[in-house]
Amino acid sequence: MRPGGKGDVTKTHQVWRSAGKNPQRIGSGVLHEGHLYLANADGFAECLEAESGKVVWKERLAGRLWGSLLLGDGRLYVGNLEGQTFVLDASPKFKVLAKSDLGETTYSAIAPSNGELFLRTYKHLYCIGPTR
Image 1 (cartoon, rainbow, N blue to C red):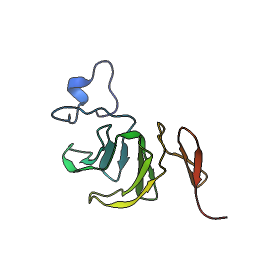
Image 2: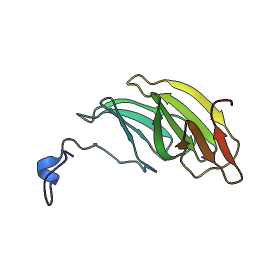
Image 3: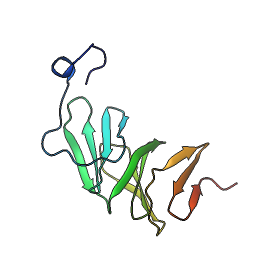
Image 4: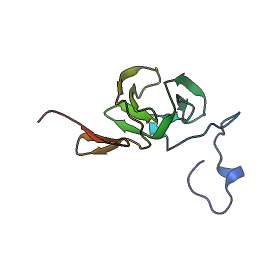
């Protein structure tokens, strides 16, 4: 949707609409350098051209993705219910930069604070950051 307008702007401000079935999304996407990055509960991450809605890539990661994508330093972070975290290049070329497995169920999004990342599972709270 284009910003602005008043009242029902569906017909006047809609730029594009995703065709087909809309998968369950648990969280928000990320807009970065003209691309929209999304993750869904079925385990797929995807990159769309923000201007047109055209799919650039759509790839299956693993498990059931959960929480909003997080963007930091040109990287996308997303976790799944099964306790795995994926780091993707925030780029129109799909690339998994890292994958970790906490081995515990999690129903939370990754949270950043002061250069550190916090991951909460059912039993633990993990802080990932530079060695001090």
